Length: 184
Image 1 (spheres, helix red, strand yellow):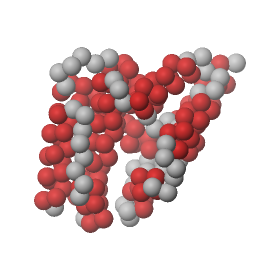
Image 2: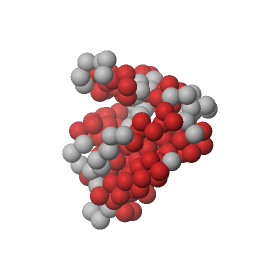
Image 3: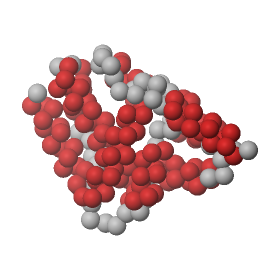
């Protein structure tokens, strides 16, 4: 029965509310956000960026990709970026692909959602690239907020290596955030 599969899917998504963003925890941020809070931030950032870029975007696909981008973490948890260097190349994507397949098992729309998730990871469409920019901007914004709130100097590391966005509108926002963060 589809209702059982949908309930299981919703429970996986609900798990994101309890999955800590481990990178913040590792850096000593008290009461760090969870993955669901980050996902909302990405959705809202993507919605905002979509208003700023001049090219036409499929807003439904954009927002669906944003909502799905970290869904696998309901099973895999949040693997912080510093840990990736210890993992084989592309293993994170492969593991998350398997988690997505398991999370979507039994729902009639699994193919559509898997295709959106794959499109996001291919980063070849304007929508997918905008989500990558939104994901990074949300991360950098949160780093800056935590830096302001806590005075945690470990967070300055986020700004040492400049990030390059796909869209100039996103780049301008990143550059301003970076300027503010480095000013202290």
